[in-house]
Structure formats: C-alpha cells, structure tokens
Image (tube, rainbow, N blue to C red):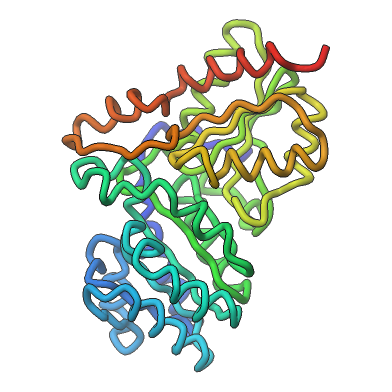
Length: 325
C-alpha cells in the first residue's frame, strides 16, 4: 500500500535535513554547501552534526556551485542548496560547464520554486527551473511529492553518481506516501501509479500530486475511473509508464507548479508523442509570471493560475472528449 492513511502535512525541507543527517552517519563522503540559506533549507541540521563537512559560502551562488564541484572532484558527494530563484537562476553557466559537462556528483537541492513562494513575488517564484535543468545533458531532475519521497530520493541521489536537481516545496505539503513505503518505489527514471484508472490518467509532480488525487476522487463520484501517477522523476522520464497510461486510458492530463513550457507537461507530451500519441491537456502556469501575495492567500493565487483539483478535473473531461473512439 503506497498511499498514506494519515491526513496531515509534512515539511519537505525538514525531511531533507533529517535525511542528510542520517546518511551522514555512515557515509563520510557527504558534504553540504550552503548559500546563506542553511536555516531555511534545514541543512543547518547537517552542519550542527558534522561542522567539518558544512560550508556556507554566503550569497554567492556561482561560487556555491563551483565549490560543490571542486569537492566532488575530490571524491565527495556534494549537496548544494539554496532557493530555486538563485540555483539555477544565477548559476546556469556553472551548472552546465562545471557540473553537467564533467558529470560530477553534485546534488542541487533547492526550495522556494513555483507560485507557493507567495510574498516573495514574481522575481522569486521560479517557474522555469525544470525547463532549464532538464535541457542540460547528464542532469537528472526530481520533484518529490512529500517528505517520505524526499527521504528515499536523497538516499537514491547519494547512491547514483552524477548531477541531480531536486526541487522541494516551500510550504508544508499533504502526506502522500505511507511511512512504510519501501525505498525501491523511488528509483531514478521511475514514476509511481497511485490510483489505477481506465478512462484517463493524471500525471503529476510535487505538491500537485495531492491535487491530482483530489481530482481523481471527485471524478470517481461522477462515474469516471481516472488514474493518478506521481512522476517524481521528470528526467529521465518514465517513457514506458507514459506509453502504458496512454494506451490503456486514451487521454492524459499533466499537473505541475511550473510553466507548461519545458516542464512535466512538455516531457510527458514528448514521451507520448514518440510512443503512443493521445490527447493531452497540461495544467500549469500558462507562460506568465506570478505575483506577490500574503502567505494566507497562496491558495487564491494557485486558483487564479488554474493550479487546482477543479481545473485538473475539468481538463480530464476535455482531454477525454478528444480521445480516440
């Protein structure tokens, strides 16, 4: 049973910090590099436990990436963390040429992506980071749905050589997975089927997975059988799973807290187009910038941009209307 029976929220950033501390007990290769955001990213937990393996380089994101690369060259598994607006935002050249080109084991783990950054506004609401990192050769791109996924995927990153980009959510998120979910459910290049369906499939990532489950439940009450996939690995995309969902259900909807250009919707469309083309509807930010709002208004901001269970359900109906008969 993958789905949690508990109704509660969890902090992805806290799960990240806890995972690093736990893995650091037995793996001395792990080091952390921070960009003056160690409290926010919870990597301070690692620094407090292993101060000799924690390096805070200040507000200097290009240096953060380059120093992490240097540590990787020295045989370390480098975790470099800050906000998505700054990495990849201010360090694209360093990521491309210093990490991806030599295929170094640098794990970029960021938070504050998407519209849920709220008060920080459009300048910090990074909605193009997945498109940026996904287009870089050798980079793997991950968006976990909750803290359980984060815990297992951090271990997966340690065990898998090469560069990674993982985006965590700023707000607490709904618990999706049971604590007992085995680690082998979180492999690079895989997606998890959370709900089986026959009429359509919703493929979601990050905090939109919870909304996809809500939409599927609402459509079930209307007599539709709609599957839900947590596509936590955006690159490499699980092409086999995308093709199977397309073939078995005939229509796909993607849901992401990212620009519909370059993100999950683009990756799924590419995979389906080359394997089993079906109607696809993309739910995401419609190629516009976000805007500032108070923390208590974040749900309203998501609603304004169509990042809701209601919009996902409506998109399922639209995609099905164009499906093969």
